[in-house]
Image 1: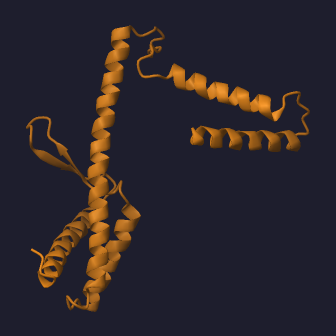
Image 2: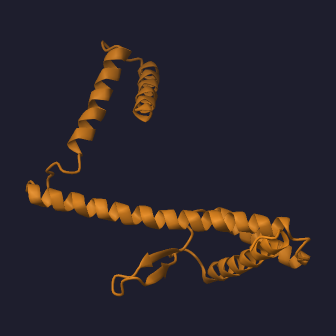
Length: 184
């Protein structure tokens, strides 16, 4: 892939720099090194295929059933992580676009300077938090169909309140703009 080729070229640049810096004389040309590194990458990809048998922590080899179970667990965990990250990304984009709308429509909404500063601060906090700083909704294991909200451990309560306030204001502004434009 393009990524692998870029990695190989970067490694080759480092090798050339190290060779010059330490005044090493080598017999291997750049093409030989490129082929060796490419072979290492291919070997690593093949050896870490999800269904391949691996060594356990105790030093013994997994059985085929254990390898299949591990691969299925990984696939399920990866699927859950992807779903959660997708929700967090959607929430971040919705909030980011919403706070921009609130700040753009501040004169229409007749926001005070204090409110405008509050939403500018909320925008700055939102930008710093990014996608990973958003809370995520997960289905509860104990009660199917029930969502529980997981807030990142490093987020302070004041940020949660700020995001709730922002969400309410964004909804009000979105509804107001939709009414004014004739959309419902």
